[in-house]
Image (cartoon, rainbow, N blue to C red; front, side):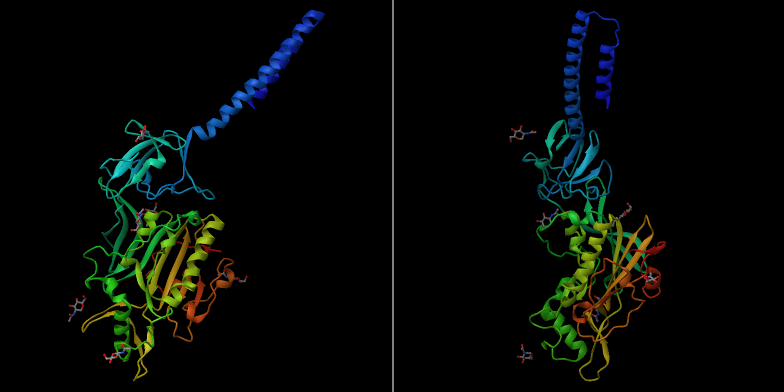
Amino acid sequence: MTTNDEENILHRAALSPRKMTKITMVAALAFVLVAVVTGILVKLLLFSNDENESSGHECVINPFEVNPHPLIVLSKGVDWIYPIHGENVLRFKQGTSLDFLCPGRQIIINNTQTEKDILTGQCISDTVFLIDDMHVEWRTLICGDFRRSIRDTGNSCVGNGKELITGFETDDGRFITALTICFNPQLEIAYYTFINQTSTINQRVLATPRPSFIQGSGIYTIGSATSYYVRAQQRATINTLVGLPENSTKYIQDSGNYFLSRGHMTARSDGFYAAQQNATFYMQNIAPQWHTVNGANWNQIEIDLRDYAEASASDLQVYCGVYGVTTLPHEETGDEIELYLFVNSTHKLLPVPEFYWKVAYNSLTKAAVALIGMNNPYKESFTPICEDISSNLSWFTCNSELVKGYCYACTVPSFRKIVTTLPDFPTKQLLT
Ligand SMILES: *[C@@H]1O[C@H](CO)[C@@H](O)[C@H](O)[C@H]1NC(C)=O
Ligand SMILES: *[C@@H]1O[C@H](CO)[C@@H](O)[C@H](O)[C@H]1NC(C)=O
Ligand SMILES: *[C@@H]1O[C@H](CO)[C@@H](O)[C@H](O)[C@H]1NC(C)=O
Ligand SMILES: *[C@@H]1O[C@H](CO)[C@@H](O)[C@H](O)[C@H]1NC(C)=O
Ligand SMILES: *[C@@H]1O[C@H](CO)[C@@H](O)[C@H](O)[C@H]1NC(C)=O
Ligand SMILES: *[C@@H]1O[C@H](CO)[C@@H](O)[C@H](O)[C@H]1NC(C)=O
């Protein structure tokens, strides 16, 4: 725009003199020619400067170029930063002050270990940041260690629940939260877990190494929670409850998917960064889920919700919880017996939930939905706890095959009438 105006001004200035002689006309023409050429040159120069401006005055980085990169937060901040919807890069304005974090210490810059877990830097341009007076290329910033942790916040939730957070602790006392867990200390299983899910979730990092499950200390009273999921152990526990010989493979089979897996409540794939994905591998984020369901309909519910977030560009608050205790008939009496993975003479803990649920909430539009996945491949019928409105959801593709985990959807107000553990928030409409 500016260059065109300048060019026009030059033209007008050159043509304005009247009553000119032939010589001055020629001179004027030559002048016009020079002016036009100059104008074009100026325009070209300015244009190329403009181009530099759009890439040169901001930083544009691939968050997954090297694994693991430090986490990036705004200076002194604790919030995850995501690409804008539809992109897979992070952009920062020149001069933006950022903190680079490697929780567990050891930020490596250009192959040199710094022994620090936080470095502050500013965006210079492109992939370069100013850190400790050095120009540092993003790809040379790596974490030598990356330690996740779980913490009891001391807050309560759902009455007797303990609020836990998993995430990343820094030397200066910050905690970058990946997951909030409301833990039921009486049954030693979560009531629900919670994440803020970015609309750009389908641009998440893929195929990163899978960490092992850990459980922190001082939260369970039962020792290693994962040990109760070991197939021989769960078989013995369940069989004893329903009056079968300890090693009967009637329910917990040797092959196939008829066993209880360590079902993620917040899915690994619900995390955008590898760090967030790793922070789902806490036993407190796990409940016993039949593997016929885990790898089938429940997985589809998770995919549907991520696809919805991506397709509708919605940042969502996502709660995932468990409800009730599923049953199998006793071999002799035929009575329906509740299933638990931990049983001693005084306590039954780690219940096998009757169903898993997910509630997604868009806080901008106050739209919400509850998705439900039944958790028992041996049951022949289910009664929905609330009116099934899944046909109103264009994005809900889960099919209701029983063995794969009968699934359906409800409005949040109708869901709340039964599942009272869902935290309160205002809803105006269905998340369609
Ligand atoms: C990175 O290290 C190499 C040698 O190890 C050195 O040549 C280069 O200048 C360093 N780059 C920066 C930005 O310090
Ligand atoms: C979700 O976002 C809110 C608002 O930014 C924040 O307070 C909360 O800690 C976040 N929770 C999690 C689990 O990330
Ligand atoms: C996630 O866990 C894997 C396996 O332990 C580890 O190799 C990787 O570095 C971790 N990534 C992050 C970002 O914590
Ligand atoms: C049963 O397990 C619970 C939970 O760990 C424990 O508190 C209780 O003491 C155990 N009961 C017996 C009789 O060992
Ligand atoms: C099941 O347990 C019984 C008694 O301990 C044993 O005799 C039998 O061989 C076991 N069966 C299998 C298949 O392991
Ligand atoms: C679902 O769709 C039906 C038919 O269009 C409509 O009558 C009903 O109000 C919808 N339900 C909800 C909860 O939006």
